[in-house]
Image 1: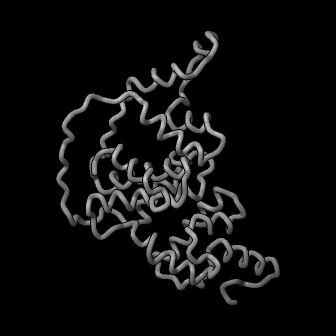
Image 2: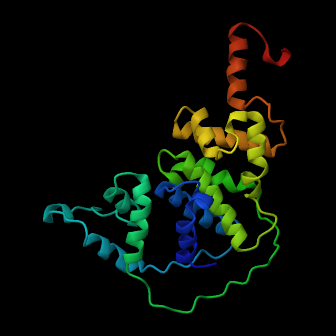
Image 3: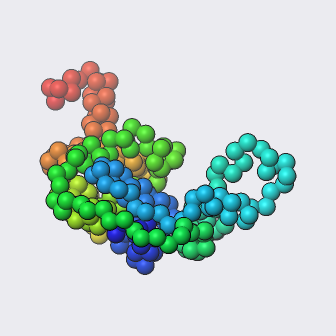
Length: 254
């Protein structure tokens, strides 16, 4: 499945499986994750059927602005289907449906034969899962903006996983995130059973997007390192060590 239209149609038909919800923010994360998996595995990106050269013209015709505003530098640098869908919608759920309506109306490239991209059915992974997350961890703003939403992280991982499934890549780097990782998290936080882990990290971070992202990465590193589910997370350990030091107690001896 190398067509972006086919990939998005599948998600639109079953958003719960792919995104855990109906959310345009989640869909954005999914697409980013799919593309990132292709880069990690050195695979071609999905073919996009939308005519990018005509898209901005088409969108600009829908935005009424004054002549003065139209002449400003970078007036339309924000304009794309996703931000326009958010602008037109009351909430993120409505924006999800608006996005697909707009995308169906967007100018398309001429119909042409889709190129075949043969893929070794079982190539060696080029990185570990943590290695794959390294550029995201270093520059989350480049992927998710200033405040990455937990659901974007979950859907990013889902997009990564489905890219691997579409190309029959084994062993999957992202598969543990949806099988053994949730089991480990349920052992650690029994109340989280059957709840997608992005909701768990959002709760643990008290709704702080950046803290939820850091919380996810901390727990993922513990899990991938083979730590027991009751291991103290690094942030909490640091707090405890500082408390002990404040009372003149050496953490290494206690």
